[in-house]
Image (cartoon, rainbow, N blue to C red; front, side, top):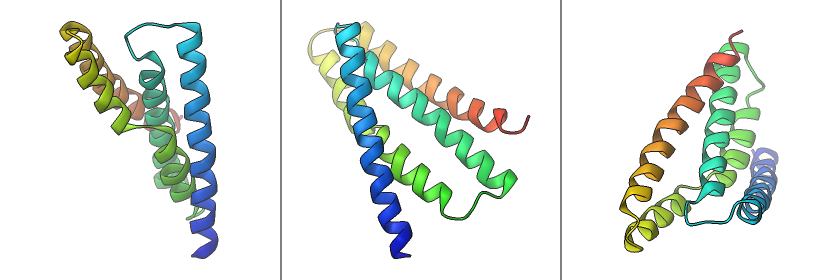
Length: 123
């Protein structure tokens, strides 16, 4: 139990650093009001989590892999709080269209990415 707990914490540290690094890179390469970094992070994280869940359910991954990689890495890598903040921030800046596009595309693409992750592992 304690080893799994420490491993979840270590994976979370890696996920948080990966999120920050990717977001900074995307912002540097593609500045603008639309939060591309958070969008990309949440979609790729949804895909990885879907893949993990499918592998765990259908191929019997070791019991600790899903909590370590799913809760630890993906939990720290993806960010609902930043998504929520950026959605509200766009609206407050008068960017209603971008706010709607960001919210709808994040939810739709995230669900599709998770479904793709589940589907890919079955091939």
